[in-house]
Length: 222
Image (cartoon, rainbow, N blue to C red; front, side, top):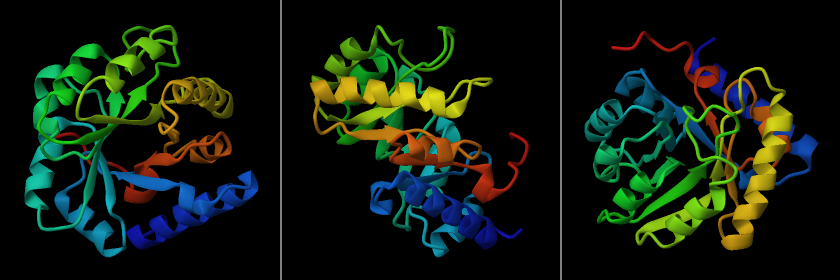
């Protein structure tokens, strides 16, 4: 299947899920994750109408943003971000999906750029996974709200391997309600990837992070 056919297929499946959920399709943003893929693929997707792109490795994202600076792209950083790289990421990214600890929040909040971000929730019991714990959610949200140039959009999470995705995303929706109690405008949910975006849509996801279902299999890491 060619790139345009994969994109059309995913778009159709998203539309089907939106109708099933009784939601407005305008509520959703599809972020195409292009990790490991060349800048040429981003150009092709741009020609197909895509404007939101996700990257999870800082050096790769930085290089692509420079190479593709002439295009009207909106870069989303969707991976774990080191505190010492945060301000550099702020130079090209418009949205950070992985606000998971105070040091990253403080670095981004002090950057010159106005940024939007999602607080990342860890849905597992493994503290080594990305994201803040359920207990740490409100304190980190407070930190973000007082951070200066960071605008909190909402909550982000990844469904744990081995757990039924919709049940996991129901917990994200519950966390979103907690966040909105503190920041009513932070109503967005970044959830759902290639294998589980339907379930995410059913539980209120607004930002889908879809890679291989659209881009095809990723090349080996360089």
